[in-house]
Image 1 (cartoon, rainbow, N blue to C red):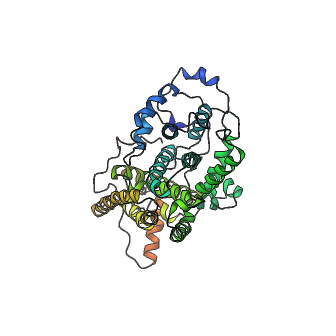
Image 2 (image 1 turned 90 degrees about the vertical axis):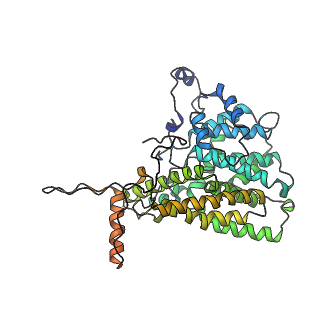
Image 3 (image 1 turned 135 degrees about the vertical axis):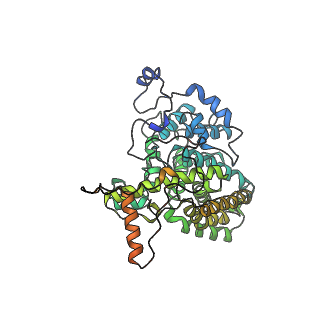
Amino acid sequence: MNGGALSGAHANHVADQDENASSSSRQTPGHLVYDKYASQRRAWCDSIRDQTHTWSFNAFELYTKTHGNPLVTITVTLLETYELLDGWLLDRAKVINYLLRVEQEYNPNSYHNNTHAADVTQTSIVIMESFKKQVKQIPKLEYFAIIIASAVHDLGHLGVNNDFLVNSRHPRATMYNDKSVNESFHIARAFAIARESPDLDIFSGFTLEEQKAIRKLMIEVVLSTDMAVHFDLLSRFSTQVDAKPDLSEWQDRTLLYAMLVHLADIANPSRPFHLARGWAERVIEEFCDQGDREAAAGLPVSAMCNRATMNMPRAQLGFINIFLKPTLTCFERAAPEFVKMALEHLELTIKEWQALDQAGLVLPPHLMPPPPPLALEDGPVEQAHPAQQQQAQAQQQGQGQGQPQRAPVPPVPQTPFPTVDRQLPLRLP
């Protein structure tokens, strides 16, 4: 699944087309999304109520079960769990309208898609439940803000990182002055949708002061998912916890929630390995796609996006050791039970990736660079694929530095790695 511009149709969300939906869809106002599965949502929500706080929650299965609507399903379920959807300040119809629009505007990228958003939303709640003992009480308004912020945190993502948007002079980079470009767009778009129409305004039931508080918290939380602020975020959080270890004394929990959602955003490597591996494959696919696009556009190929030199097990081990483990350790005083559980899974995952690396796994078969073109005796060589060009450049650089020539990447990994994983949704071309 490759990213693209926002579109009216959400291709990866329509697993089965309902011919009878066309007439009903024509009756739906243009700013709303036809609720094709309204009659099935209750059963879907009921089927996952016992999974909303488990670490084995499988967003891939939920994607398949809900015909590509995992985000609406998990978000509605969580709002109902905390009694936010009925009898509080929210209008159920507006919430459904809003979430349908949000899910539609998630692009079908390999990784930054609606399934990832559903996974992060559920993870945020798992972590919030874990630090309940430390903060003593969590107001409904904060539950609401974190659930919605998690749901929209990658809204409209184009499948490329901030550096790509800046280097390619993308209009979004111009709009947001090259600073947290993706994150600024995600949260701005989330509020823009709500303000399009009263039918979409999920914040209309709150007072002006409550709306300001929710907006401030959501903006800070989503902007904190930018990996460029990762180390500063950990430093600020550690400093504040050292100064005031009792979290129940924190009058302003903005930093606590920013740290929480940032952790939720990067925590999937600590899921059970069959899930962690699925997420790893997808994020590596998206990185490699970006590298191909950079090469094709004549831009420098980002180090972690070079298909010719990418090694999935080592990339995951590097991410775990540099980013995820320190983040979990930093957050341990806030959510000790969650961190303990996540670290236990992570240790098993580290062993799995080490074993796959020792076995010779480089990339899944469908992500391997294509073989170099064969030169014809009396004809020119065909134009190389960007990934082939990356591989040739990497080899030339190694030779130029007096290093031995890199061994060619094996066409098939030496360890079994199914091309089609029945647990995961099929990708679109």
